[in-house]
Each structure stands twice: as C-alpha cells, then as structure tokens.
Figure 1 (cartoon, rainbow, N blue to C red):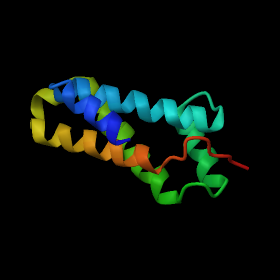
Figure 2: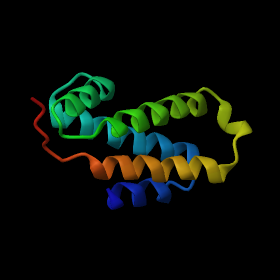
Figure 3: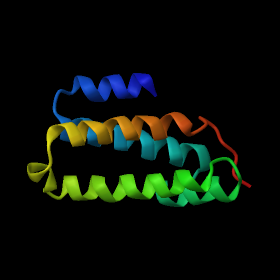
Figure 4: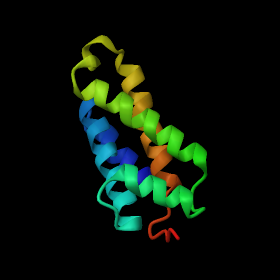
Length: 103
C-alpha cells in the first residue's frame, strides 16, 4: 500500500494519482474475492467478517467523491483535497488482505 501511494504521488498530478490509487484499490478488492467489481467485493468481505461495515461506508464515500472528481469537479476542488483523497484510498487499500476469503 505504501508502494502504491508512492507511485500515485509520483504521478505529480492529483487527478492522475487518484485514478492510480482507485485502480489499485478496485483491483485488490476484486482479486481478494473474485468479484466483478469493488462494490460487490466490498459487500462480500464485510458479509464474510473480513472487513468491518465501516470499511464499506468509507469505500462508498470514496467511490462517490472519485466519480465527482473524474466527471470534472476537480477544477472546483483544491489540489490538497484531491491529495487527501489519494491518501484515503491508500489507507483503504492497506486494510484489504491480499487474499481474503469471504464466506
């Protein structure tokens, strides 16, 4: 996760870094469950007791903000806020076991 955060920050542009961390987060979630997307994977991991319900809430908030930024809201948002989103994504990524097993 620190490696992913470092790679994202090295992109130098907050929007690009956010997309990189999102990709890593979604990929880790899907890989840990075999689910088709991060939302389904998150629900499986929470239902299986691998991750707490608060993770699902944080992931959903992160996903919604990322969508707003990707759709153009980043011009209205300070770069510091977008960098904070990158840090949040890296923190979420660190919580996901590499090969979690959801029941």
